[in-house]
Length: 176
Image 1 (cartoon, rainbow, N blue to C red):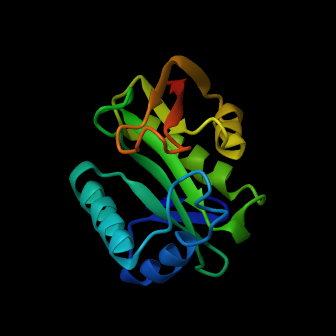
Image 2: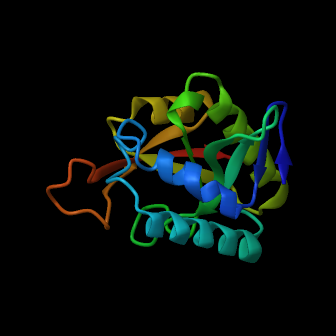
């Protein structure tokens, strides 16, 4: 669907389930994202993303390395979750396997997702969320030109009051 120099961002395939499950059970990958994922979680996530792709034309696309076809994770655009400051707005997000970190893949995929969004969606801004401790994630947001929306800090509605990942921060980028 989206080609970059080193990556392909595409709809999800059945073959992505295994590496996605492995990624979702890596404690370091999931450190700021929540508990390990089950096979059922992965199947439901893939089904949601493919349904979104069919309905909206975009989703958190599977990221494949062009050189060898390896599944690296996901990156893309979806609608923000209800009961958050970005509900119904276009959200950019990413998650990569640990062995893909530090190689510029997340930035390459995120830039391609933003370019696609500006070319194909009638929106004035795109948002992103993370937890304050996830410096790698909000650092990328800043490198992409996103700005922190201090008024957008919130407690995630799906998490309990004692969850260490409860507090979230919001970043936004305006249409160029």
